[in-house]
Length: 511
Image 1: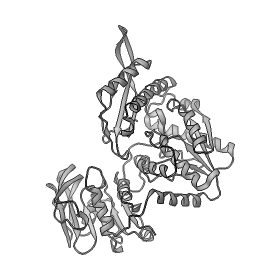
Image 2: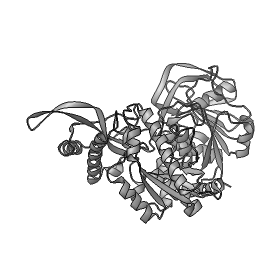
Image 3: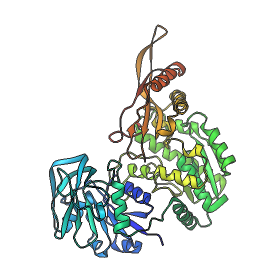
Image 4: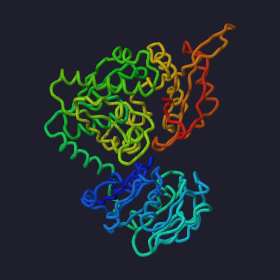
């Protein structure tokens, strides 16, 4: 039986990132809300428990805390950031607002290099993000690491396998973070590193079969990585009882419909029905400028199209979607008390009156994990290595009102961006690279005449998982070439700008 690590979510934006790091160590894990009943936790029989970070303060009246029955299970526990403060608060230590808050990289000095911090040497870098700090330790706890501003940056119980760290080992900014998590999983919990994406596929196929039974499934196919892997995974489980519907919503890139339908019918041998609903979507979006409203309209229209197609094709109970965890965590409070960043059309944007039951087998995965699953399912590299494309399509890259004319301008500019990134060999090194049509015009000079035309923004980022991202340092000569081509070849554009914002504080998409 596969070893399981349980992550109790206190609302951190990086809870799923903890899960991803655990999986990278080839250990299976599940996430539950921090207030999950002890009976549910016992049923999972975890080898160890991780307490996530969170935005609250433990001394607040409504702060989420831990049922102490969890600690009575006598399983190894690792508290991270807020999780450390929860342990401290519940077990008799003291937590208070820090005089000097700690955000960003900090020098971590190791006081006890055994067990949790083994292999880190005497000093390393840790990523801090906290406004509260531990002032005094609970009885029978000892400090095992400190920073200049945090005397108790890491601590452990002197007798029991209970540990806590004030920093975030799950983020890439803590270079030895994976080593710390691996120490907890393998040294402290004694887990066997046997879980792989192949294991995920086997488990998911079994769950899909059990959930679907003898019913047929309709799959929302966009041609991107997420929906493609979803379709192949569901097809692996139920075969020809899967029917894929590709909706041309008028918000796609140039040549998208033809290439997607051909790939899936000829290469992957899936049943695909193509629906041209471009007029419908553009009519629904007429006059709409608010990005949240755009997403919700698109979500509702998608479901409307699928419901209509389902009625033509016969009875369907399930709608399969390529929802990933970054979609979920930015859209709603999923497990713990996290903050909403924006609504994704396929999560918070879905209408409450929808007739389908959703089937979302990739809902707890990150993009790189999905690509690995796709590789195991023999999906072509041309699909797997495509840059992420937003579910609402170009509607969230045409800032302001979405019209056919503005979409045509963006399609032409975006095609140039993709061509040049591929031609120069930059494409595969980027997480995403695309064009955005801004809702402003600027004065220019073309052929000695004054122009007053549109502005196109270029966006290129590097990232591991899409949860955080940095702007890509594109060579100036490439940016210059792209700018020249867009201005010369795309009618209606006289200025190109480059976005040098990171996520956070910005998001990758502009809307």
